[in-house]
Amino acid sequence: MFPGISNTPLNIKIYLAFISGLRGSITIGGLAASIKLMKYFYHKQQQTLMLEQEKTKAELQSLKAQLHPHFLFNTLNNIYSHTQEKAPEAANMVIGLSTLLRYILYSCNAPLVPLQQETNMMLEYIELEKKRYDNQLEISIQVPDHYENLMIAPLLILPFVENCFKHGTSGMLDKPWISIDLRMSEGTLKLKCINGKARNIKTQIGGIGIENVRKRLVLLYPKRHQLSIIEEDEIYIVNLQIDLNTKAATTNEIHEVASI
Image (cartoon, rainbow, N blue to C red):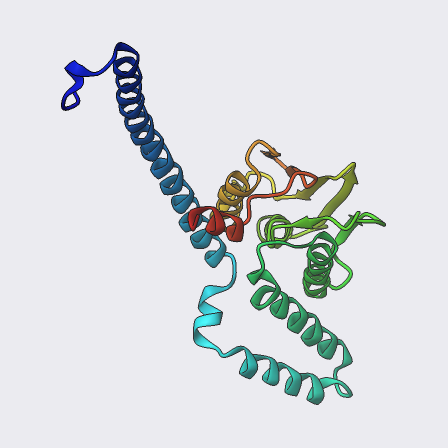
């Protein structure tokens, strides 16, 4: 094993044999740890790619690719100026649309946004949709008074509200109605969306937008969310619950882990 070891005292032989065996075990253990670490980093990188893909779909990708944001907002401001006196209602709609687009194009680049900001954008969207129905739409909205300074991944609430209008009220000829209830309980968000739907019209449950949200919830809030979607003859119900006390695995954090 070692040169000249036959002339070495017994205790030295034992020591050298121990070191040799230890070195072998460290090599095997180190190799196993390296393989495990590589698998871990690979998994995290795959998560990062999936998150980026799903988030991109939710951010009006075609709009960002075709229109420069400065051009877009300058145009909206010009429309607002021309309609403010002649058509104040239309002017207010332009401001609401501008606020919503600014949030989607800019604020949603962050991995987390204030929950109150996400809720405000939901309300802006509802106000825009209400204009389409004049006084024909019956809508009930409940939102919290306090948000406990909690943060949430952007565009997780809005798609479910949009779904109420897209698959519910737009398909009903008489008396469309929507109920949206957003509550907070010890750092847990609870969203319940209910809308009426025309009888015997099968709704495509989810659609692309909802499927994207499902995947993002699994990636960002694993084992910290519950989502159920129920469709009956004349009603469509969404129940969403997210634990916001436990910090979500943000894209930035995954990048930091992968770069170690």
